[in-house]
Image (tube, rainbow, N blue to C red):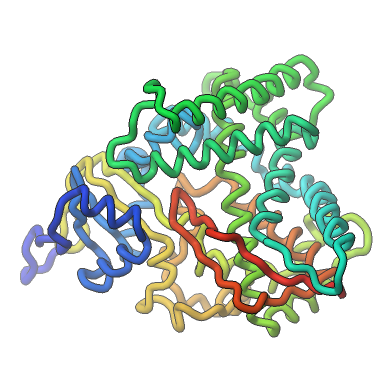
Length: 451
């Protein structure tokens, strides 16, 4: 609330310039540019876009926005741009339709459902480990980002469809790659060319969509024909019924949710896992702590209950999410006026919330650039603001797959570090770019030494 010494509505600071210049600066180096704005103007910055847009790194305001309801804010225009790819899945939809889809999707992410996936995750991770052991040499230089991308893709495919899809897997993987490239274009383009116009980029995207849809609709039809033959996430989606209307999802809705989960549900986990191994390669004391607690795991197939002893492993993943959140920013559009302190934000304004900047905010984190998994110890006093850390968003629109990602990370880290020590590669440097998510340029080469 404004005090008597504060104006009812203060001018929000920010740079001058054109929308084109701001868009170009974001496309060139979004995180570097946003950091410079934060340092120069503070935690609430008005940026020169086509409509009122604000960069937010104030955790109190982040929380106020994320804890709001559909009546106060919704996904911003950038997510709407993705609808040609994702249709009206959870990432792109808003309002009552989103609420209905979220209710229908919740059953697929119940703790018991996710727990049942752990043995499959371990099996897929073990296949990868065994393939590494067949490589010659005491130490193997491996691009961990490429390996994690393949592994998390294989896991999400098996979780969704109960099968590895054999030759169809490559069709989906190649189509997803093209769709991801197109999503990155939509994310930064000042005025994207509509998909109906046959540019080379649009033709590639439409071809990828046709290939993806052919496989996905075929799988949906097969699951409908033989529901008793499948026990997977798609089966749960198919059986879900709205508690108010009793209706299930149409084939189109199923397609949108399945495609959304495949596009958004494996690369973000793969990116964070890659950084977990990169960080551990440079912090052998932390790697030793992970290795020490792996002795608690049984020799046979693991269950979710077995992972509860992997506290330090979970802490490493949490700290990697802090330093390198794959989802580095969130956009929200205000659906009503918002007042905060002595600032007023108009209905229709876009609020850009940056996990990357807020997670490293020196006012809320001790040694913000340092890798310190102990920050997230179960018995550690919570020193950070609850919305100085929001890798999976927050409030009712928090990521539905957050627990799946955490489980998967623990299984994969444990599977690899039981068999290998990870070491840095001399002269190798990791370069990341903020596209629709953080991506690697040139991979993440690491050395893996068999134990």
